[in-house]
Length: 224
Ligand code: TMP
Image (cartoon, rainbow, N blue to C red):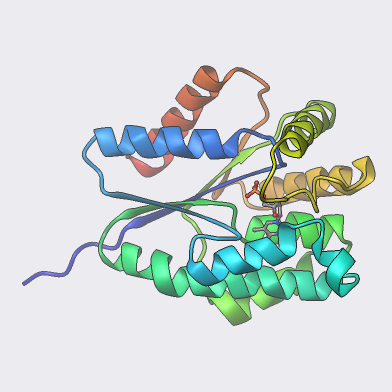
């Protein structure tokens, strides 16, 4: 019996409210319609442990309960989540030859904890090596309209979230504009450093137009 060819690993990145989750879902549907076997997951989350970590890290009430989360603790929780999703979801799917689409990855840690919280990129990339080894996506779709448009979207989303009862995921979204400006700048730095892996989409176009752009990028870069 021959072994399945290793699958393909694609991630989506962007600021809160960038539309990356919608685009990930649309790409998944399009690839599945073309006959591919697709697995989608997200970070933080995507496993039972990851969902618990997500609850702790994103809930704005956490710091009321336990005090300030140290930036390095926050970074380590993101990597704990990542280690679990690699073991439970990503590696088995890649070994089975599937396409894995993941909503956020280490670029988010570099942008949010490295840039936003000021830890710097080096410590994040060092932790990536320790926890994830050499596992990186073949392609990262980075949705990054200019900072003002990004902030407007993030704030709109924040307002929408506030209207929902139940889960509270506002801890990051309640941050200042300068926090998001640092994240935005770090995302740019990643795109400039790794143009082969990262496809930067700066457009603020509508959902359909960006969907076609994403589909073209995936076809051109990965032949899928
Ligand atoms: P999202 O699932 O809506 O994209 O939200 C996840 C939030 O978690 C978002 O504000 C970014 C943040 N985050 C980090 O700060 N570091 C990370 O490594 C990851 C994966 C997410």
